[in-house]
View 1 (cartoon, rainbow, N blue to C red):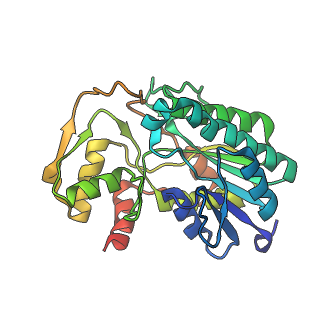
View 2: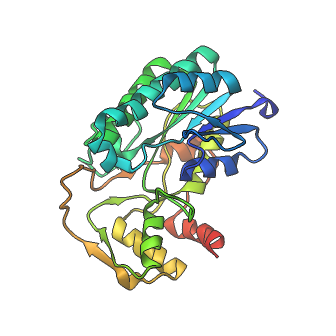
Length: 295
């Protein structure tokens, strides 16, 4: 397919990843979606909890590609407390989107998570068995399995610890949560026991667009190159951007009983790096990009 015939539908275009994907698309024609009642001009209304809304929007726009960036608002903790609604959002909606892609010959890019794994080991590859510990991970894992069993023209991109500069957000990522607290001179507590590879949203978006435009299919790990714990991550952000790191305190013990997470995971990205050109950034490189936006 020639690039001038592309029509991308970006589901969840108002979120951190969705906005980054739209920027990465450049001149490629696209439409973003909005889930509320008063849909802003230029966006298409699509409520992932309403199958008819999904079908109607896809019928209306007739995309050649769909990149599904939406996540249940509030993250894994809210998913745990609202498991039925979270399953509809993360699994049932993905299945409806997938069925539309199958019947209309649409290429599907689905964003998944390290939470499909249990963290029983440190390094995970694309074909390792799935064993999620929480409702959020279960919804993503079941979606992955459905896609792999029913579609042939798809990308599943597993990523983790996605962050970026988004001061207008009402659902802040880890970096923005720190920023909002520290600018008001509030102390924050950050775990030392959760390890992973922080992934800058713009870097992820460039990779997603490259994968979407390619003829490759299957599961790929796409994450940053620096392996660190969340306390080290936030401290480095403070150091790079000149925030008050003295207000950042470590938590050394997991006392969270609401939701289980894998504590120490590294997504192996060798498969992605072998087949695609987008450079995956270190944390320092990511923060240098963000610093230009921040300043």
